[in-house]
Length: 273
Image 1 (cartoon, rainbow, N blue to C red):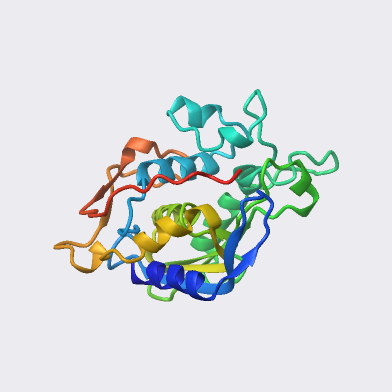
Image 2 (tube, helix red, strand yellow):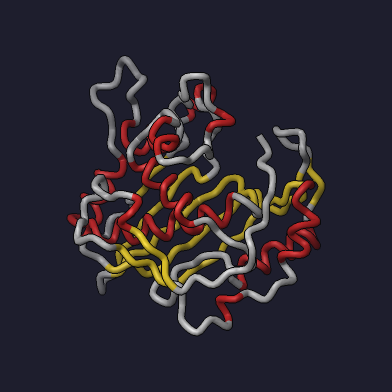
């Protein structure tokens, strides 16, 4: 995870002190990107543990088009509870716009399932330049519990049948959010590739505001001095999908395993709400 370490060190060395919505404060840099070859390994941060099962669960929840925490809670996940209303409602967040854009618009003729449209395009118009899924629904931002940080992704099909995915992050919490997002969108690239009969190749992560919260700085200084175990592991980290299913809507959390993931200890960090 050399790229992750380099970004963290850049933030600590060059970052500006910034006020932020949460009141915690950050050190921030603007404009960076990373590229991961998914044929070499599944990209999980190794200088601290990434709890990939939780990350994958959240991605399946996005793909379900959920606007409520209930399904996550049923699986023992409390990631979104801090932002939810008493009944678990979160408004038209990520998955709602992915799977049913326009669902709150009384003048909309039909809900738009961007994920299905994208998969159909990958299959039938691979050279297309509109293979995009966006969660940045401007007219709904004020109704969301949180506006989307990972606000869009775009896919590219190579002539030899490989799939690349570029993730766009307007805002990236380096310590907590970024390791999750890398894992989630690497998984999504594999799922899109399976759905379209392609082979997952590259995940490109494009970040606007990359930041470390002020109460994470000391912990991250220590973490970034650790040896990245991916560089010395006997075998590269691999994703194993234990089903022949290719339907994007039919995966279950237990369908996924990650093998050969060697990592340093989990680092407990508070979430800025």
